[in-house]
Amino acid sequence: MSWPCWVDRRRLMSLLDEGTISISGGTGVVGDFEADFAAMTGSRYALAMNSGTATLHSAYFAVGVAPGDEVIVPSYTWHATATPVIHCGATPVFADIHPASMTIDPDDIERRITDRTKALCVVHVWGNVCDMDRICEIAKRHDLALIEDASHAHGAMWKGKPVGSLGHIGCFSLQGSKSVSGGEAGVAVTDDPELLDKMILLGHFGRPRVGVVDAVNEIGDMSLGAKYRVHPWAIAMAHVGLKRLPELNEKRTANCEFLNDQLRDCPGLEIMDALPGATRGGYLEYKFRLTAQVLELVSRERVVEAMVAEGAPVTADRYSDLNFTYGLLHAAPLFTSVDRSEFGGVFYDSARTDQPAQPSLPVAEALNQRLISLPGFIDVERDSLAQITVAMRKVLERVEELAE
Ligand SMILES: Cc1ncc(COP(=O)(O)O)c(C=O)c1O
Image (cartoon, rainbow, N blue to C red; front, side, top):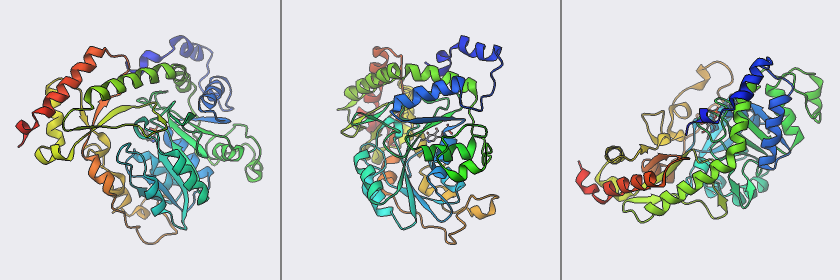
């Protein structure tokens, strides 16, 4: 089922008929959505924006990320987790991932903390929740701001607590492919009125603030001009998805568990289990790992081709597919070879003259080329899912025949 099925056409038409095409004060459909999203995450405040990227920029800005600072992020994620760090003139420092969940590795976070580290941003990638006990403890011990990029994980939980509410700010994309979607939109959540006010200061001209930050109050209703206000039609669409989220997460979880159970003993394939304490949500896509032994015989692309020929809608994992964009972020030209000081604006760390050496991240490097994906199925017949697993198993049981 694709997102247009979720559109409440009458609600959208009524906004059009009444001429509601822009809301600056966080009222109406925007305020209604924010109240429900804050409640869903157990947060005090939610601030809707026009993209998930905008929420991440706002979060880094609000916690005070500035030139000279470093922010630790996972290398295995969509690039928008890291690029807003450079909007603040700071440096993203990439950390390795946990082999089972593909989420950031707390031990590697600790290794990468320096006296320049200002914040951590962890990503609940593909709906898999990070080890938030360890991560919250590390952030507290080192006095670091903790941001959660929960763009894949709407409704996921760590030990019963919703993601987004475990750090200082939670950021959610509501872009077209996400499980709560306004086409193009995003939402940030926080319990901290000061952080809320600073996010409003950056991108929300005309929006009343809580009023706890003196410097913010002094500039009146002006903002710093990033203009991150959301379109009311987008948020009206996202509200429909939010109301359906528990039902969608239930269906996705049941489908994921069915696929995992069917494929658990499949030769050549490893299942991605959630960490103990994590309840998955959002998902976006289902991921599986080919074993290293399979890749000694045949390329991932050849396995994918054979599975597709057998009728399984499998793709090579797109974050590690060099033909898609760049592969892993710590090896991407934007963060390695490109001299960003040649760009306009503040897209380089002016306080740093050397290009920081990019680390080797052995787990991410070894695993990412082994990942394959299935769509995050919602309404699909059990028989169809079963047929997919039969097709995948058939290819892997006879993988020697594919050897080039
Ligand atoms: C992990 C992650 N973070 C951030 C974003 C950025 O969200 P948006 O496309 O809404 O700006 C995305 C988008 O796919 C994402 O997957």
